[in-house]
Length: 268
Image (cartoon, rainbow, N blue to C red; front, side):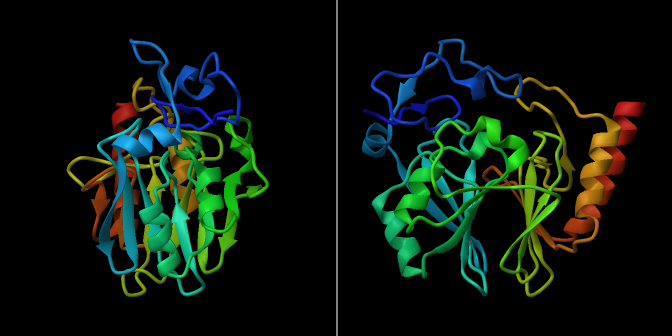
């Protein structure tokens, strides 16, 4: 029995003897099935050719990313907190070195994930880190491909994980969320956005999409709702899902300006 992993989106599936016939995550219009067709792998195979690379992004913030690039190629974040460490978003590979590094840093108190494209091997990460709880918004529960006892499907608009706040923004998915950590940046705060908001390549704005690979935009009302969800929170930096997608200063103002720019563009 094998927990197969989709090589296109990185989602890990429950144990089975044969690969799944299809990947629902890839067949949805927010992702895609590669032209070459669906391909499957597993944790053991990935670990023979890949590893997890750590990078310290700021005081108390470490990015984790699979190298060489695999599937969507997102980065996860190990966030050091006053009440314990949080893993934000997830990867398809759990390697021994990362598990040992997390243990040496005091372990995890929680895993929280922005949206279904980054569920990846979340159950494996929880198991490797002592069966810590995994927080996903209940609006996206249908996209879980490998259930497990550590899963916590939360409802409502916010969830407290110690001093951090998970904020449901919607948009990209119904339950798409961001994580606010007020103690970072010397108390000025940081926002971890996955691609609920996408940090642009010039690192001066964020933008918004229902589907990034298929270029399906969101409407103005939905984007205004994202802005309203994060407006009560102050944050200096914004950490996006991909390498280099970090805004270092004035994050709260950047989001407000980005929403206005986006709405002007789609409404002409």
